Amino acid sequence: MARLVYSCRFDVAADDGIVTVLSAYRDWIVGHYRNRLQLDGFDFDPEVVGPHDGVPDGHSLFSLVYEDGDERVVRILWSFPDDNDQGLRWANEVRVGHFGHRCGVEHLISIESVQYSVSPAKLLFGSPRAIRDICTKTPAYIGEMQVRAEPYTLQQSGLNDLLELLTRRCCRTLTVEDSHRESTRLDRLHEQAITRPLPHHELVQLHGSAAQAR
Image 1: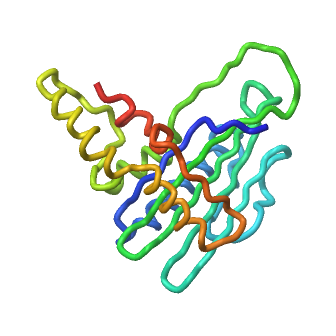
Image 2 (image 1 turned 120 degrees about the vertical axis):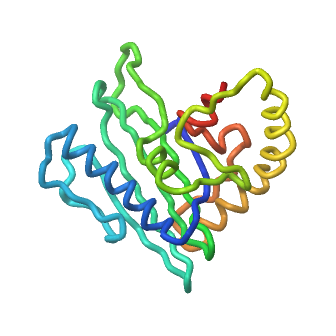
């Protein structure tokens, strides 16, 4: 049974947001196969619908595109074995939705055991490089709060400001109801995605940004 280990949801400006986001995911996935698996000729276009035939055995890469008028959702499903333990499989589900003046991004990562074994876990957790690249190249927002792809330096004198931001601004913006509504908006363009209201504490785990604020 797969276990969710990472989730994030944020918005970027839609001027060229979906192009920037899809380009970041393409570079991330292509880099995995060209650099780590030495598949020099590997390429991937997220907007080409269907399975990708060029992945190795045990890997799966699939894209779906849904459109409704000016609104569009690109869904990427990518799974592959763990580098150190072939009995474990990583599964990525990415949904990028273009809605009017903004582009919504949702990324879920799960891990599942496909082969029974007893051994020490050798897992490294963190945000995907694509997330950090997106937040570096274009302004990213959680509600009204802009987030950066770098640690936040917090001076002792700014502690009260941080607490006020988290309790009055962030928590009012990112309610469970908001999460349900945004996930539903991404889901309503297709039938295969499952609406999943995320708890507040799981909604955003941007490794290397707010999660490392200190």
